[in-house]
Length: 73
Image (cartoon, rainbow, N blue to C red; front, side, top):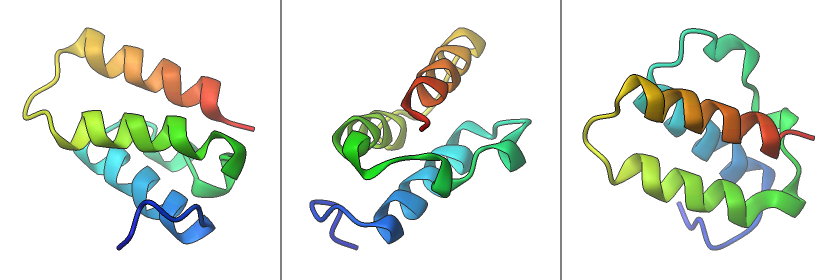
């Protein structure tokens, strides 16, 4: 998958990856269609950070979830 291309499919891929890696309890409430392509780069940055880290503290997960909320439409 070429994440340098802004697309709805890539947004969906990144959102699912972030949810899976963070093991978010309320993952059902986070859907790809909640995110706008205008914030694609911010979402991509978050995806890169999440995918490159092995373990997360509870505070880190909370902070990342807060950031996801800010990126929503």
